[in-house]
Amino acid sequence: MGELPEKFPEYSIMYRTISNQIKVLQKQKEDSQEKDINIDLRIEKFQEELEKIKKKFPENFFESYYS
Image (tube, rainbow, N blue to C red):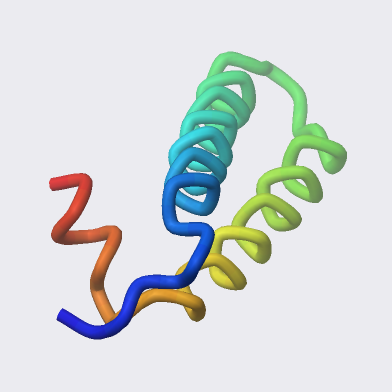
């Protein structure tokens, strides 16, 4: 495995927190009868943040770490 970033624990916690928030928002979206653009935008924003975190780690790190 490649080098881990200096602030590995913080990034790991952020990744997990953001992932959980995305799951909550996706559940809200599924449960909602109406299309909510705000939920879609929030999910998109969180996914962008996850991608930024993933780029700091070796390829497929989180997939293997959290599976």
